[in-house]
Length: 303
Image 1 (tube, helix red, strand yellow):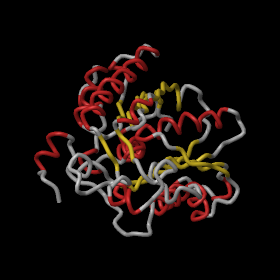
Image 2 (cartoon, one colour):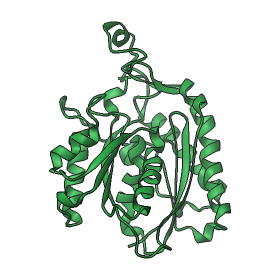
Image 3 (spheres, one colour):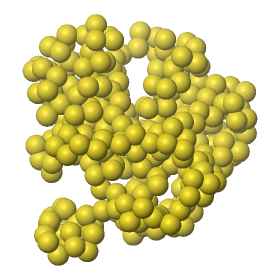
């Protein structure tokens, strides 16, 4: 489709295969609803017990109604409220930090976070700089209070810098440039990325914030069980791990099988590797995304 090769893609970003939702009429809520239904079954949760559902996505089914509402309807969740969030590839971190505040009030005991992206719907498959990168995925997580405060969510460091809007964006489709024949013809409704600019900021900020989290909690590389990074680019992940002093076996990577699934990539890695985690394991979650947005979460595995 474009002038590239498997070797070029693997050597620069590390992607071997991806999953794509090809059928029109099946948006992000299609995948997300399946994930939520499987989550309810796995946790033996009746839909009526769910108090809130929050969906993070940059590819909502539509501008409105919120995708969270659509998911609730498809999953029979009638006693909850919720909303959508959008923080690019850092979306899981930003959403998790938001939701944990609701849990800490004591008023909420069962909140579902769904991260879902149909990135293929906004990728220009004639653009070599973006079309090899992105895949589609959805992951659902049940967030509940921990009986032991030493386990679960420990801390977060989150940042934004609006300079990122010049480097990674989707121009058309919002109120600035509503959908029209002209902007579709100009391919303004697809992802636009200035690769070198994004890489420069990502490789510095993702490493900086991960190291900052370690210093804040007096953690050494020996104290950390795993780094769970956003799966965007192997070189960015490697730079973050080196800054933290982590060997390769402590860095969870599945980009070769799923590609960049945006805000879904961290929970997708957690799901993919959860059999490795032991109760009390220290995890550092780290991401960088459009906006720019970036951050780190210190989480101690609770199962």
